[in-house]
Image (cartoon, rainbow, N blue to C red; front, side, top):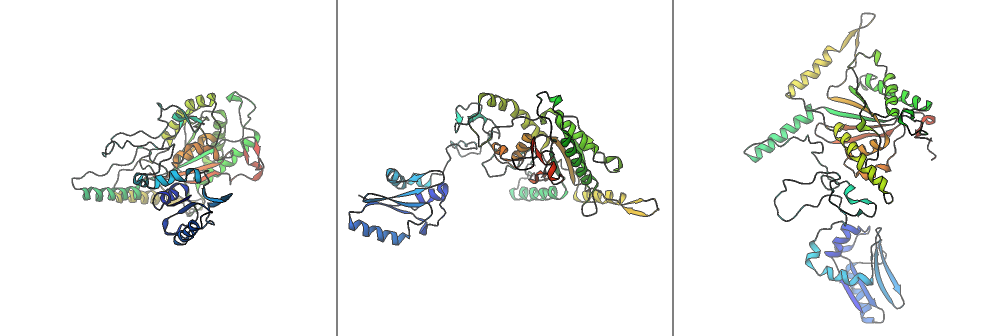
Length: 446
């Protein structure tokens, strides 16, 4: 029995697309041979074919299996795919089918909505990202209801520019080129004159987890120390140190409605030392129940979700997603020409550049940059981890792979153009080793 297959376009492209072998295959082709060793002529043909295609059994992922007096090839992949004599015929038939050569690879469970290809017109309506599969039945890989799978606005890893609903529309003009020119000019002004929004998420301090009633789940003595040191760090950030490490314009401190978070926020605010600060007022917002702890969505890896977990996800996800949409968005664009924006900044610095000291001398005053605004949100680990995935447009089901210690800082910037970056994730640099905790776990040996 002698079968020689050369699958340059079909199997070769399939391997590059989904199998991803680590070894380069000469001429972009893979020659695979199943043969019977009893035929000397067949062996000579195999040797000639091997020399022409430069294929050897030493390639990574490619193995020649020997069974009695015959040899077969097998291609192994990390996902468990194995090409052997049983499925070689099927692949050979697929290689000869032109339709199979050009068909794009589609995963069995796409995370993104599959567009309707019934016509070539651009769809005027399309499913919004989120858990929108209310009509779907069955489980996602046997883990949880498919309807509870997060669906992105655009296919991963593409970036959805209008993720917060604040992406400006193109400038209208009868001339297409003129519209593009005016839009590009407008976008440059946004980048130059817009305000960058900074969001600092802080997890509450260590608290007593032995009670079920929220009013009794208060900070431990260590948790109060953690909160106090976090407040001192934020106070330094607000006041600034020198001209290079200048002050930051913190507008508001927000907090969830749970006791441990409110106690943490109170201690943080009290330790910012704002009484001696002659800058702008830092607002203390009312507690927001949207920021309360909960189960934002399912997590992967994880086993099959119990019915109670499915119910909690249905209950908590809409609330936590609403909190994300409420607080994560780009800052409003100030409506002023570029020259006015520059003059405003210069005016602020000029009027506050000097002050009289006790000796009557002029002393330089540190001034916050008006193009940067900060918000502090004191909340909870699950909420912070979910916000991290959502803000960076990563699969939210990865949230449990992250870890945020008590009173850690997770810090985002949202540019006026809508791009988002994370500058810190779970930063506890302000806490010494003997104050580093994750809930009731102390240190790092856990």
